[in-house]
Length: 599
Image 1 (cartoon, helix red, strand yellow):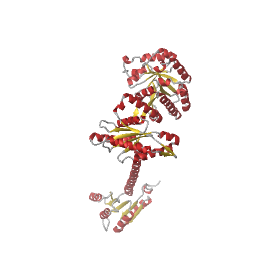
Image 2 (spheres, rainbow, N blue to C red):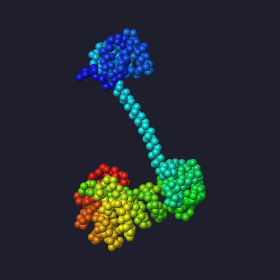
Image 3 (tube, rainbow, N blue to C red):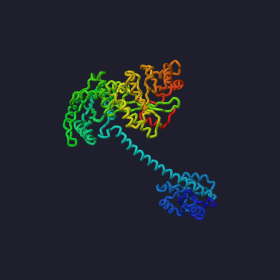
Image 4 (cartoon, rainbow, N blue to C red):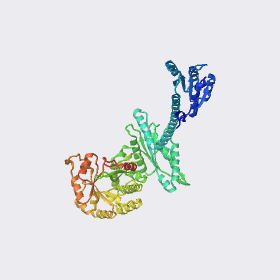
C-alpha cells in the first residue's frame, strides 16, 4: 500500500516558493511533485515577483528568513500589486514566535507554518489550503453560474409576464384592449371624475350587425380581414386620447375622455356611423353593416365601470330595435323591471349564439364510503359585459321565454361530453354518474327522447351514467304524459331523480306510478340541522319512504360536520354541499379527483 506521501492529491495546484536555500525545501518539493503539484522555486526576489505577476500561482510559500530580503517585504510587494494582491501567501517561519505570527497575518498571510515541522504535517497544511482554495473557486464559479441562471430566468420571466399581460389585456386577433383593460381604464376615469368636477367623459358601445354573416358565408379568414377593416375605420375617426376596445365578436367600447358635453359624444357617434355606412369589400363583394351605438354620459353617480357598460349596452339595444343604423343615449326609464327582463332575454339569445355559458360541477359523495360517486352539472352565464351571472337570476327568464330548451340541450350535451372525456382519460371510475337538471318546459318537449338519444350517441356516453333531475311540479302537470316519458327513459337505463323533494306536491301516489331511482332532499331541510333531534323535521320520513320504495336519497346543501354526522346516523345514502366542495370548473374538478378525497 502506498504511504500518504505517495498518493496523488485530489486538488493539485501550482505553488511558487521563495527560498534562497533550495536544499532547505528540497524534500518538500519532491513530495509535492510526486503528488501531482506543479512547483516553481525561485531564490531571486525580483524574479520571484515577475513570475508571480505572469503565472498567478495558486499558492505562494515565503520563507521569512530570506537572506537578501525578508518574506514580509516580498509579501508587501505582492499585496501592493493589483495583479498579485489576491494570491494566497503562506509564511514558513521559526517556531514559538508569536510576534512573527501576528505580523504574518497582519500582512495578509493565509497561514503561518513554523519550521521545522514533520513533512507529513507540513504537506497536510499546504494541501488543506489548496483544497479550501479550490472549493472556494468552485463555489464562486457555481455562484456566477447560479446568478447568470437567475438573470436568464428573470429575463425569461419578464418576457413571459409581458406576454401574459398581452394575452390578459389585449384581444389576440385585433391587438385592441379587451374588456379587462377597458374596465381598468374606465375605473381610472371614474376615480378622476369623483375628484375633479371638470373631468367629463362618455362611454359608447358599438354593436356591428352582419359580422357573423360574413364569417358564415366567406369564412373566418375573410371575417378577420373584415373585422380589421372595421377597426381601421373606427381608429381613423377617433382621436388619440380615445380608448377603443373589443368586448366581443362584434361589440366595441369607446371611452371619450376629452369631451365637454353630451353633444361631443353624439357627434362622435354620428361620425362613427357615417364611416361604417360605406360598403366593405369582402372577396369582391360589397358588404354593408348597420352599427347601433349606445351612449352613457359619465355621471358622477356611477360607482362601478360595469354599470356604465351595462347601461351603454341597454342603450345600444334600444338603438338596434329602431331597425336602422343609429344611436341612443341611455335613459333611466330603460332600466325598469319589464325592460330588464326584455334585455336579459335579448342577452340570453345572443349568448346562446356565442356559447357564453360554462358548466360547473359539484361532487356527490357516498356517506357510506366518503368517496365521490357522481357530479351535478350546474350552468353559469359568462355575460360579456356583466361577468359571471348566477342561474338564480337568468334561469327563470330562460324558462319564461322558452330559451331553457336550447340552453338545456347545450347543458345536457356538454355534461355528457365532459363525463365521457373524464372516462376516456381514466380520471374517474366507470360507474360515476352525471346529474343534469330538467325543467318543466324541457320535460314537455315532444321530441325530448329523440334529443337525449342523439346526445348520448354523439358523446358515446353510457345511458347508465346519466341521471336526470326533475322537479315534482314537472311530472304532476300531466301525469299520463310524464309516466310514459319516464318509462321510456328508464327503458334506456337512464336514472331518474326527483329534485327538491318535500317542497312541492309530495304526493306518494306518483312515486308508486313513476319509475324513480332517487329522491333529493331539498337544502332547506338540511340547513336546519344543528346536531339536535328537534331539527330533523321531515328528513327521517323522507328516508323511510325512499327505503320502503327501494329508492336512494341524496341530501343537498350540507355545510357543517354536524349535518353530515346526523345524516350518516340516519343512514342517508348520498350528499352534496359546500362542506365537500363548491361547484367547480372542469379543470378544478380534475385537480380535485387527483387528490382522491374521502370524507
